[in-house]
Length: 500
Ligand SMILES: Cc1cc2nc3c(=O)[nH]c(=O)nc-3n(C[C@H](O)[C@H](O)[C@H](O)COP(=O)(O)OP(=O)(O)OC[C@H]3O[C@@H](n4cnc5c(N)ncnc54)[C@H](O)[C@@H]3O)c2cc1C
Image 1 (cartoon, rainbow, N blue to C red):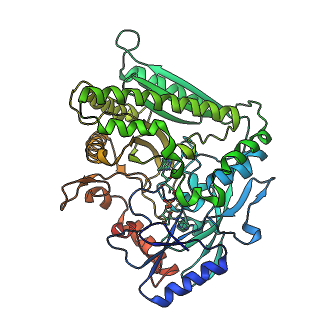
Image 2 (image 1 turned 180 degrees about the horizontal axis):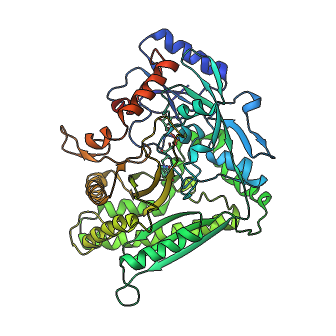
Image 3 (image 1 turned 90 degrees about the vertical axis):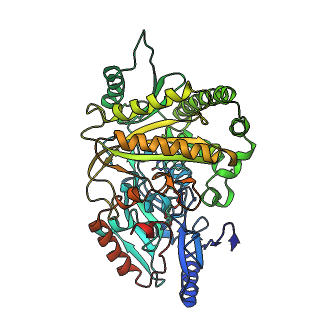
């Protein structure tokens, strides 16, 4: 056992050890268990310190499932069975050298498999392919009574996708991967200026539509100082020659940075303190002069912009797995993310332009203000996500296309109040300009609001946003499932309980 948080964190190595933990917790009567992966989920979806007492956290970083579920790749079908405590990095290092890819992907490989399967708001960036946890075809779980169940029935698997640890512990998963058909990783920058290419609805939609129609997946970034959109884009069937077996050495090198699967216990953040780039963010925080603050922020934004293009190109050269944010570059971020429902495809229906344009207008107004208090220094980015019907029980996105839009700010302690107000104001702009529904992400902050007793702005404090997240029918169906699998409430804890 090791204590790395307010709660004891137990790291069982086998089903026998996990069953022993559950048995002991049950003996205590008033104790609960919460599973945790790499710990990247914002707020308290694992444990809610103010409310959850007597909690034991279980982390599967060292867990080895029975051999039929342990690192078994069927090279004919592309199905992999692996521990719920494996990192995405471990999955790609096992499967990419054999020529496999995920159908869609997160930005980086620094999450646990359990964490991305159990978080209902984890998405991807492939326009028509649904979300990353749809890759799960079966799960092996340990229930509240310590018994193991293998779930292959597709209806039942839906209950476990997005279950936030509230039904039981996902000890292993079976996932379906796709074969690489010569994937093309491409990159484009579009600059705007009043004379050569004005920023207007027609130009921006045409530029984004070029990516949307010619590629299958994309992430767009906007640099407010350069008035420029970066298009980081993928075409899966381009037939570009590549030898996947050559990727093995690059993965081995990165895996060596995380002995004992530390990535799944620390989320990768331990390597950060040595990075000069992030020390510059602390410098911005300590500067009070608005002009100087703006200048430094512009410099950092330039660095963040080149970071995106450089890592994308690096990924194209060495791995072509499309996960381009290395774990070693993670710092203390503050994030705001919203899923905004689109009337049709998000591009030609004008949703993307309406939201991006409103954000740009507001950010550019701030740039000319000498005392804005906070200047943007990291990515403002968006993706297009398809929510396919009937893929998870705890569902918060109606079927169709959604714009997944977010902004990231790096901060030191001193910077928190300014960046939180900045994120609050920005979220209000997105809420006002969204044509249809807006939903939050359980892994990245949103629903910013004022907390009554402190007067501070905090994520997940806006009750109205939380209350509209799940319909009454969804809540009732999920609660019935919780009672079926865990009648005694052994796994019940974390922020999600407020919303159920
Ligand atoms: C820098 C950064 C970039 C991000 N980029 C993306 C992105 O590109 N796309 C995206 O969709 N999201 C992104 N996120 C959000 C992230 O995907 C989610 O927060 C994800 O769930 C984190 O996985 P984790 O392993 O850290 O899980 P944790 O945060 O540890 O846990 C998430 C939830 O899953 C439950 N859980 C964990 N393991 C198990 C298990 N074995 N059995 C049952 N329940 C379990 C936990 O109880 C918790 O409720 C990003 C976050 C950060 C910080």
